[in-house]
Length: 604
Ligand code: GLC
Image (cartoon, rainbow, N blue to C red):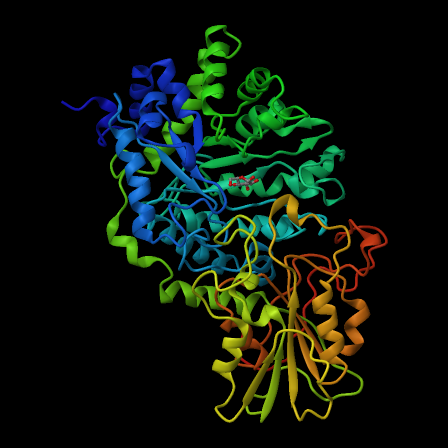
């Protein structure tokens, strides 16, 4: 006779309560503990009843590990968890923020800022579904996505992880959750976690709350903003995420008026859980509980006490789990953390695990292994690249050249490191935490896309760096100059100057002063471009397009018209920042929602 919690014929609430009633304190604490894969093994999982494991950015079983190797790793952890007394499966999480981007060969979609430029919620939902499938293809159940922060200052290193500066657009883009987790059944109760099935994952709306409004664009910095900015700008997307039944919410490093989010009972328990009706589980960001204090980790036990009582359910410890577990046991046994609070946390975690089907299908579905990077997903990514491109300029006083470009020119020049580098076009959170240049995974560079598109008679020359020997009589019909930012993530992307890196400026001056040129900018955010505009015939914002660079050529050469609109304000100078649509004295170079078209080519 199966115990009720193991019987799928029972309701999830019955199964949760039965299992909860059987659990020891040690088993409950283990469910609240998420550890990084590098400190995880069968013994640790079995000794501490660990409930969740993650891959931090770039943390893989091996360099360029296959989907089989990923699935083998997760299944090994899962086998250990299933061998514990109650056999509660682990949930394995990863930052699949623009595809399953830690995994070699996965489809890499444009980062969210480019998806915001598409204004296409249906497309974004399809991207969520494709991402979920490629995550499950590696045996992983849980994606720390989507980031639904509202980015308000491009000096912030996480600008590109956001869909827009406009909360209304971010709200529309939360449809990605229905792709990741699956469509909601008719009448599904609001706020209750939902995961459709084995092709879906548990999603995670992050980072709660207000990280996009961080002061001066500095990572995790305090923000003294008015109550109405919090409730009019940063909270609205979480209403939509909850309506879309997001199963988890990640609590941010940031502070609001001096109080760290992980310590804020009013924002976690009262606002998110009680007022907004969120019934999934909250999880801290990486060591965010340690960071309640400054310096971090001083009086760690008290920080844990404050965070769990504030409403944190799972803690992304993720390395120092022994100390964490030791402290939380003391806090519960001393009554500082009540048994009821523990049960509420564990109940929420178990509910999501039951909803995700982990008790019935805990092991990787090996029939999905071949779904990684499949053609259908790459075509969705290529469509997203096309629709994300924003045409900012398309005329020059002294020249007739403008987009779309001729496919049958006799000789053209393509210039710039970013034209021929998968890593640069993907940006941060790709294969590694920070991202790297180079041939880091499978995809099509912008240069390859151009070569695939022009006629066989067209000679395509390529230079990576400025060519002092280039002359205006080089009988090139035109040049495509692709410049931009190096990859970065989080605090390493904080940048006060926002200039195009010098090599790119040099290239613009070298090529655009001699040849009719289209400049394509690969960046996670608006950059200073005004001084160089007179040199360019055309300027295209391509954001961080991901693995399918062919989508850029599809539009440059007129197979498709431009579709993208700015999801953010394009400033003139950094002295104007922060500057967002609706501000007084709003004087951008290009305003929010700006985007030209050529009138040539198919729509989107
Ligand atoms: C990072 C990020 C968060 C990510 C987590 C796990 O610090 O803030 O977005 O999900 O840690 O990698």
